[in-house]
Length: 219
View 1: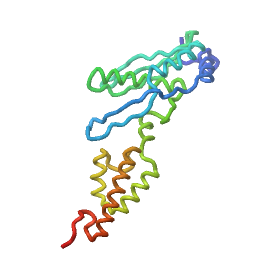
View 2 (view 1 turned 90 degrees about the vertical axis):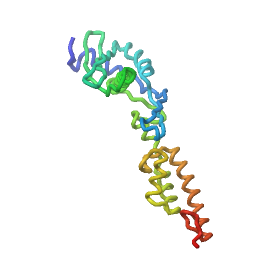
View 3 (view 1 turned 45 degrees about the vertical axis):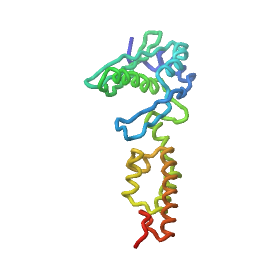
View 4 (view 1 turned 180 degrees about the vertical axis):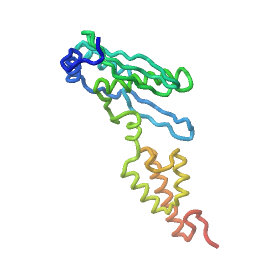
């Protein structure tokens, strides 16, 4: 067996055939993440879990005489997998290793190994996970962020209401973020409603001769 197959090797030919036939895998699962800081809101994103990916690629791999082996490995406080592609001819192709933080207990370590398997398998086989939010977990989270149009509306209502930087920081803190561009779409929509209501309240107070911020009437 060899880890460096030639360009005309059966393994390379099989991989070419596999990638010509295999399709990208759908994001059929939904992950929900609760930040360690409980004051921050949970967020979710779609992804393709390991079972879905394996079920999607195994028949096509087998058709071309291919298989994938992922061996669990560890290094200090990290765990992960080493991925190897096998061909029925006896050739192998080592695709390197991927390590992730092991965490504080066996459950977290097992989750890291599973995530490493899933994350490594996609690029090794030349496929992507596609769906409502295309990209990896971080990309999925980013794609749920507030739109430019929402952020522009937030800015306009902040200006209309005369909200100070300190006041805005306090409001953003209730959403568990420090800046408007960290808001999710749902959070931005709620903030816009709150800002519009506050802008209207301050406008009514000013029209009545009261202080727009406190609502107090000067003596």
